Length: 294
Image 1 (spheres, rainbow, N blue to C red):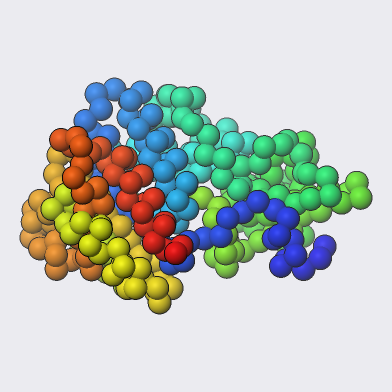
Image 2: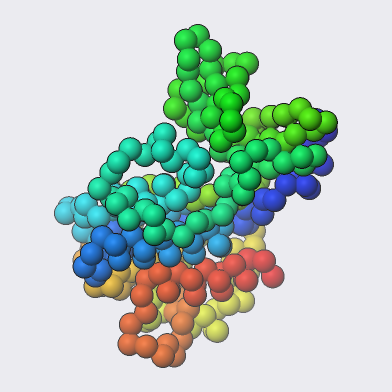
């Protein structure tokens, strides 16, 4: 194989956002939906939005950390399922009640979800693989007709990132390091058990979304300037259908304006009484994506 820099030019993989974006979402998301079918569809729409705008991580927080919402588990399971390569889902996800309506979920079509069953001819593509141990040997299931034998041991049932291609009739494989890979390969999801202040402790810059915030038309240049030199992840947080972020922060004993770097109204003069969270995610991330890429 030639050097990685030249290989990257011939595979489809959009670069990560700079700085990386993390989304904070309440565990009550889709809680106003009465049926699991509708909840599943709305979480699917959310995951499509996160993938569209290359969000690195989704962090699910509880509005009241003293009374964790079990719905957080549903969001994480569906998000992780959608971000998993389709050919690995049966191996990683047994029959689960949370995935009863998984067949209705839209495909993500992220770079690690190939559109072919085999490696491309004279080209390379990204794939996600699952490490399998058989006897003393270690293999990777990358969705091909045969398992790929590894030279060195890896933790069984761990997922790996690899690049594959068929050159001169031979399958070529190269394992990649996820942490140093500068391209978007999906959105990781985690559940945060603490309060908002604890969740925000890792961020140099944080954005709260609120109808009561500063109109984006007034702070767009400020956001662009303040994020231009940041390399570590920034976060953007959303409220729920029941409570806005001001109310959630107050309920946890904090002032929203003190917690976040800035509070923004991304949809000034909105034409509906209430904006659904997934609608706010699309609107806010589209504007943030524009500002970060100007």
